[in-house]
Image (cartoon, rainbow, N blue to C red):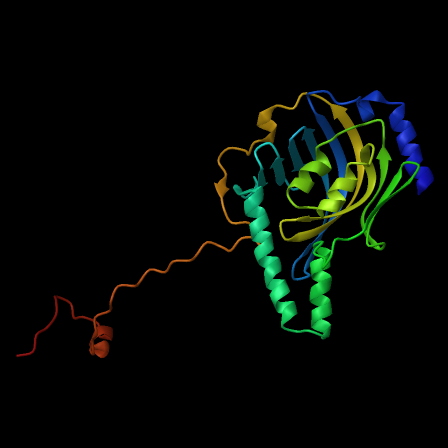
Length: 283
């Protein structure tokens, strides 16, 4: 596997169009293939494979799903995050503080449940969920291992948060930094990620997005530098804001009261056909 990764990096090094040059003010565009596993806070898993385009420009970052059309847009300069589904014509929007508050409220529920079942297997399972969200009783130890282009980031010696091959010819600050700003990584992990020394070209990254634990196995297929306009970090027009499923509570449903029914005891008469020429009256 290491030989294959090195071959990819060597080929890229001989092709300026494939890897781009050191990014200027314009930005960096990365295309990659991804196998993405989402695990929600109840342990439910969803897997998909797709192609993505990453737009990276300073404090602005976007993931454009080229297969299903969804978008994740993070503006660290505005401290806002958007999740959009142009196919469904919907989007969700949060400030960083709002997203953190929603996540904390849900994790507090898990902590409260754990406190009610001390010394049981349920307590261990709930603690495992919390640690999956980087919620530890004490600050974790964080170690970044480097072997040639390979980087591996470990928590507490055994929890792998990142295992990737680095292309050190491309610097694209803004990708992992933007995710870190939304709470995707433990703060100590976010600090260590600054030492990667280049663009992750292939491997696995684990992080938290809203209330999902994400496992991404990816391979970069192209990198280029170009000007990226503000409009590329905006939502498509015509979308309707809706709660983010699994993260925000749904909109409260309202029920209309049906009109009152007039009591009648003439059911049999109602079923009787009327004679021609009008209703016949009794004398």
